[in-house]
Image: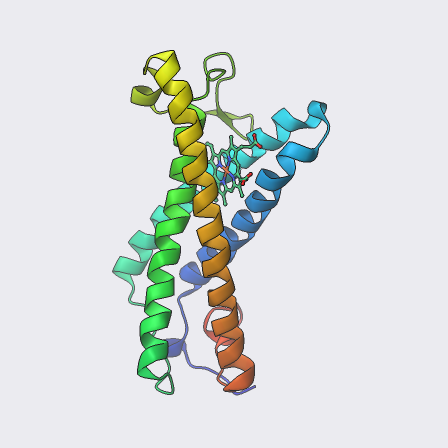
Length: 191
Ligand code: HEM
């Protein structure tokens, strides 16, 4: 594969944040989906880990957005057609939106849970983490209804994530192997 120069690569921090967030998101999709099908004795621990990963993703994505604002990403390769440029920017923008929507909707869903008061949230069993106060204080019947609505939003965001991830990965592989551009090298550690 041809080499690639620093101006065409993301910064080390952007690369680290990209891959840490990617791993945590994939792990969280798995944890969220298996939570319904595992023995009861594991369910609480799995959902608690899911929440911890999710809040971590929220923090890292906010950091990533701030980093991106301060460090312009490398320009898209000149070989991209106009359509590919628009699609690439569109998918990246929507991915940021969905990756923010997932933990926020999950946190809202969890804050509307009737068992919230008797099961305080804690990141990795180490750091106490608050629920969203205005949601917790809604009266119980309406809160139960919102609990369902927020879960529907959380699950819908997950479906949007699957579609966007598929486009993102297909696009990257197409440029790398079909067009033979050093696409992955832009976002891989090591240069
Ligand atoms: C990267 C962030 C996140 C991702 C990718 C994610 C993904 C998912 C997925 C795929 C599901 C299963 C949906 C379904 O059954 O159709 C789920 C369920 C759930 N999520 Fe998340 N989630 C994230 C963050 C959060 C956060 C921050 C919280 C709470 C603080 C949370 C709370 C929950 C809960 C309570 C469930 C229901 C689990 C069950 O009872 O089966 N999620 N999540």
